[in-house]
Length: 255
Length: 283
Image 1 (cartoon, rainbow over the protein chains, first blue to last red):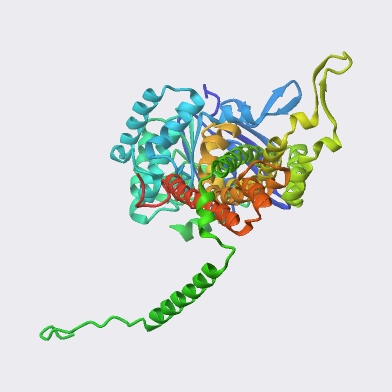
Image 2: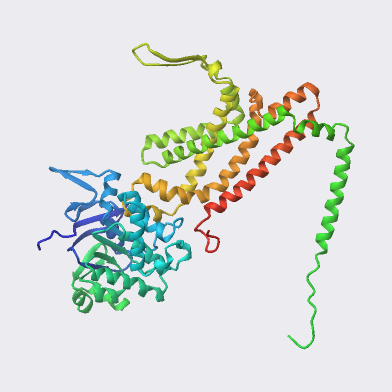
């Protein structure tokens, strides 16, 4: 590989009190790769995703994004924990889309998209607006620019959330069950936007239960259970011909 | 249902409502008669004093005391709430202790305390340590006049209450909002200012409206240290002419009028900050 991996995890662990949620995650995601994380609920896939942009702090192992340690700065043989400001700086170019959208309800769709470019990157308001309208058009919501989140359907809100993340020009996009809170007929629109992103070469890590999406769009699939990656590889292999019993049992239930 | 004959709809008859209305009007008339029969109400005197210039001066003082105490109290309250929620345990403790003292003692005690601050610290001095250079040195009674004491006591007390209201508002904002903002690379200060506080406002404003109304009436307490407010004005008059009842009615009329104005303002502001939270009423 000529490029360093976009994400590299080595024996990442995370515990909440006595409960060990991640018991040792190893995973490598290359630039431009679309990786889907599958697994039963409680397997740690969402927790691991949240570790990647340091919304959760890891307790052990090491995690790099684009060659930089997540949450720490290394000098010699010491790891210095980063200050809140530095953590924020590194999060700028990692986009995240949440299961429950988490749009800012007091801002319009346009306001949601321009907020971070203006306040964080210092983009001029007019330039941010032009870019935001282009992004809203890309997700098929140009005419909803002035609507508040409360006036939008779940699928529309999630597409605005994707546009909001894209406005920061991320090098990596994290999707945390982006379609799980949607009515079935709205899932397609969101998945279409995600497919478009994948086609454009965006590096994406997607926690999902959409097997069709994983099979069709993903370059790699990782099956998590009990806080470890049980099995990983191309979707045809993992989904079509699983080697582990746990993967097989899970796929039998969801397919 | 048949559609050939015309059927008359008879609404429910509310006999009870008519009966209670009759009863209330009757009792009100009796009370009014008793009131007017009293030789000490003196409606004419009420009219005489309602717009006297020293009463109006008192009204103005009451209004700006309320405004100043609420502005200082809210600003201080935001600071205290943020300190209370900060990860720094020293700041959290400091905020807790402030709220504990100012919420835990009666406002009247605090007002009198600040009024007699000079008894505790006769002089207020500010000097550079080790150099002997004195930057400021005045008798306390000159600096902390009745008005200053009133403003100090009212706003420090309000800070403690506002802090709790604002802290509640901040905690009411969904944690997903903070996470989404953090994921966009926003710093904690920016998240607070642009994402959390604007949403907390919706929860904060109704109780803060309440606080303002309470404050308007609490200013009457500063009459104990001659705070020059509305209550001080009417007290000064009735201590001279003994027309206690008419002058208390004068004060009550003014307080009621001002509170009504504040309630209208509260309604307008609540509508403004409700934007985006209902499907219909977005402007």
